[in-house]
Length: 215
Image (cartoon, rainbow, N blue to C red):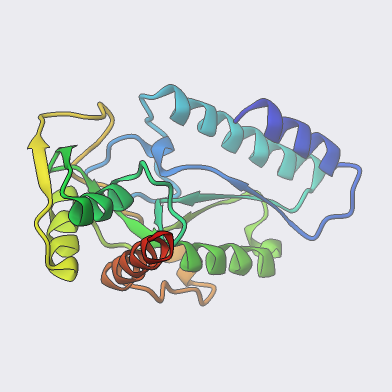
């Protein structure tokens, strides 16, 4: 998260690029009570978040010093078809169909953004790099859902009960408030097109199709 982007930006000085988009993280903000804005001071308490903050600051410095078309996007919780099996939603879907039990914390909340909307957001950033050079851009849905709300939706769409073992904490950095302010990107015409329910339905269908082929 530090050396690789530094090397990429160093090489970028010698190239004629239309845009260089680096991936930051909503983890850079740390815990906030309201919607997270790009102008908010980073208050991360994790090493991962700290490396992303470092990347953001030297990316902005490269953009200013060398007039590079560099922008940092901060995706919130990206979901969709092809999501990693160990993530929350794929685990919920798998447990719904297999009947296995999973450790579960109800209260953490996330701002979920479909992978298709994320890609559309990145394309929008590239198309408007002239006005976004050196800036940070949030990409999220501006809606927050708790783990429990997601679990209930998966149960509704699958018609199955998900068995869980309730635990107090799984990840120390989880919070009950986590939502993006996407005013900046929306000002360039981008809006997320997929709701959480649409994405969940697609992910459930993908799981069923894959396991139908395997059997």
